[in-house]
Length: 347
Image 1 (tube, one colour):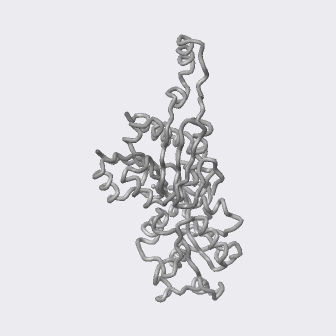
Image 2 (image 1 turned 180 degrees about the vertical axis):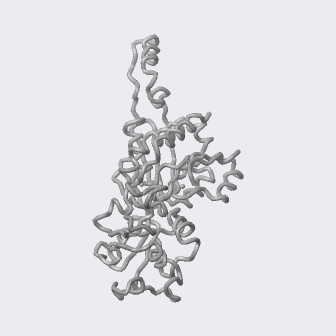
Image 3 (image 1 turned 135 degrees about the vertical axis):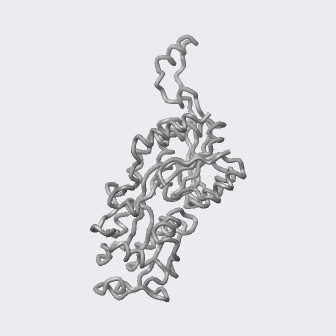
């Protein structure tokens, strides 16, 4: 048994595929319908197969069954969109269930063998790898898209729309500005209101929380009183209700709620950069706040259940097209093609 990683060191929507509150078991199912046209005799069927050598694997192998996915709330809109399209356009005989318990909670289910995929907005941890090894789970970790950490404000906040990265992070770090963690806008800029800043973010179940803590503020504590939530829609509502709010989460939740949120344009040293599908890039202007997001594939499940392997292949076939629809920048086509080949090689 081994754990194999792919890629570099890195989904709300109205969907017939998946609907539920965050942390629930959002289920996506397709109609069970025959999708192979009848043939007059075996000889004609063989000729048809020869003439359609390029047909997709779902049609060729008459794949059916179910696929289970849990994990990242950040990745959820993308994976549920892919699941919807797969069941409607690719294979209605496969039911794909996508849940969003959060990266850490979803990974725990995965390492215990409860799901076929685990979506994550961070890399697999060493302790999770150890648990997989102990449980005999062979894992492949694949990047699926690029996300930009986005700092959001109340839509009426017109004073803090441009900040340096140091100013942004100091607001969230315990003790960075005030020993009692009472921070005023005027503490950041004397021209700003003498009003206390209220900080918001996803809770510890989410890889976005871990990325913010571990990668952006170097493991320092969040300031006391930071309002941490399990559900991203709740965070959107809280920030929208609080004129003195500032929060962080993935770009997709900002993009889909621009009428309810403001955004911070961040100066990383060479001028202010606003997160967008054009700036989110591991080597671009927003690189410091850009990360890969992942899905993890249980290799044994892919070997034993053709639906799991076929769905994995499909994810990387359409990720470049569907990522932008759900607030993600796509990975390079050649990288996605390599991942398709890795999936197809599973036997």
